[in-house]
Length: 406
Image (cartoon, rainbow, N blue to C red; front, side):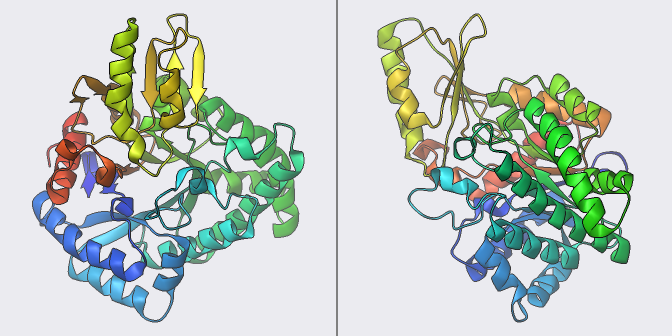
């Protein structure tokens, strides 16, 4: 839905909340939930939609007449697609996803082909005059790439250059601007804004611009412009908070580097204050244990009173360390419902999310907003509310936080 003055922002929810096994199952969920949600929020105007498609679902959608059928559905219900979530490549319904969420990474031809399929889908679905965004992984999982591995980084840049050339061709031929937005995440190869800015300067521009200039037959300045126009950042507010990044400073660092924030994912993580007593910490560990049942990674970053940092790749291996060390605060990459700001003494990072939304309203640094709470199936039983009601409450939370009336 379009919100804010002159409908500047496009707000949607990510259909990653409907994990399925194939396009038909996903399409069935879209038919079930989206028109009903639109009827509650925006019955008389066009309603934006953000799709999460796996690689196999993307190929299915492009085969036969599936895409034209989907276009008929969009037209019949006054819906439009403006953003795609291209982070997870595969099926999200398995028992263990964990670090596989980053595979294949940007070294792999499969990641390029998958992204090209998403570009083709969005090119055909994007309304006239609209801008399109596709979020993707932060290049790779940090543990998979050695700090000095130049070959891996050059290969990833070459693949991003290939995608950039395709996006530039679409813009020149059809006037459609689509950008690919790297999504920093804890333990991703790009994790914080400083790493993003360094990658853009030292690798994407320094290495990628000459490659693009040569392959496309354009000047170096034009190649740099193409890269900065078509490669940006997807800013996830949970990830930002879990990293303890101050929003204004992070946005300033990106802006100083000329990096586009192509999409903002509106999310909130878990935030806990660690008590001093051993018995209280043991009770907290028991309270957090149900959150380890999810198949996804839930990275943990702790801080002590002096700003010292400790980091764990997932919540389950972090819990045995809860009774150790000087850490006084933990932030956990677990997407909680936005409207649940406190849960049995556990807090969420909603204040950080509100801070980003306030800056967004003030500075308009991105037009695409995507609610990306996807852990509904794995929440404790008393948080598992009706999905349609929950989605509606998520939208209302965002609108209230931005001081916008539905």
